[in-house]
Length: 198
Image (cartoon, rainbow, N blue to C red; front, side, top):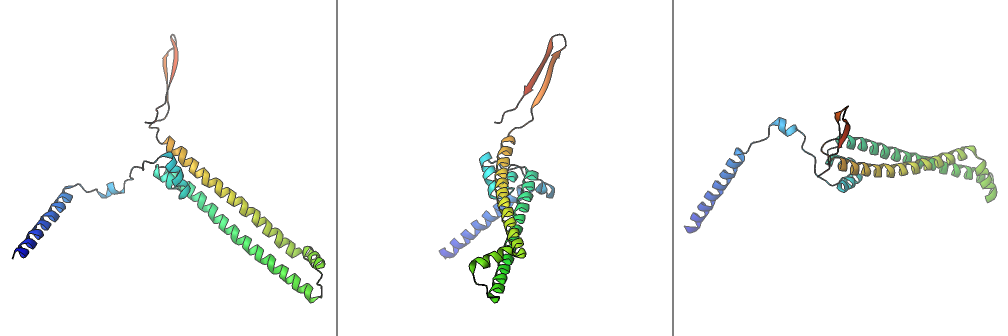
């Protein structure tokens, strides 16, 4: 009997606890749909944290300091750069494959003609206009790939530097104010007020 009573007492406490928490949550004001859609204040991150975030994930550092439009522009720029780099790599692979196929074809044709001297084979390969064009195309694609890799690294550091500077500038509460004080007889005085970050 005591075990049954203990269970009923525990169940009663559980009901009271659940009812009390439900009553407390019902008393708290719930956000309206308009309030829920309003933008939340930006995260407070250090300039170094914003820089690291921007370099790890495009736009993350700018979003953390509330610079959403700048972050979106860097996301678009880095996405376009990555797409162009991948497309150039695919074209480079295709150019190398076509050049290899043409070289194999020329070598097979020379072997069918009975030409086996390595110097003659190399001379005939260099004289083949199609193979020369394909090799030049592959070399051009390689240069494009190197340029895009360098540009990608530049954009990565530019994104981090911009997030770092933007985080510093976000601490200034108001712009610089310039006031002109005085009269023509006593002279003019120009005052410049610069609010410092806290």
